[in-house]
Length: 161
Image (cartoon, rainbow, N blue to C red; front, side, top):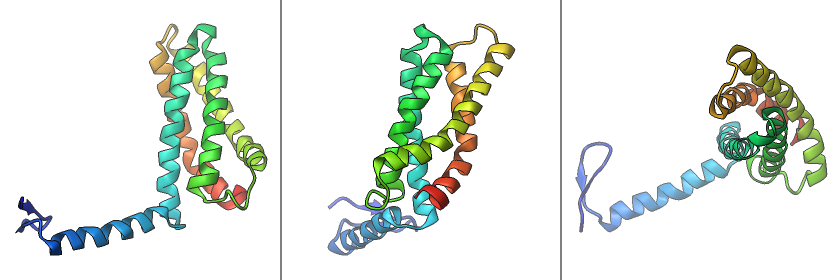
């Protein structure tokens, strides 16, 4: 058996007692993460947000040849559709209560605010830093997205889902 150090600093073996303690912790953590508390939903919201921002960045960089504003709009549309569906199914467990179209319509309306703010941030980057890299432009839009995220979470939790 391989010994390991617990958080208390106590060296323990990989005994049945230790494995049992770890095995009873996993279901509690899973239940907490999959629960309906605001904290669990917010954690899932952030995970979905990070995932959709990765998609946004990939689309934006891939489409910069057609222009940064066009790439921004396509990136936001693609990542928003993905995020709305993931929020419906996983963040808020609302797949049984709210349909796909209703989700896209209502949550998409909230995304228009993000689109307006993201486009304004992109315009500001172009004015303040002419000839800036795609990376700087992506960072600016994602920063605005993160800043509006809390408002979006509260609106989705209280209104849409």
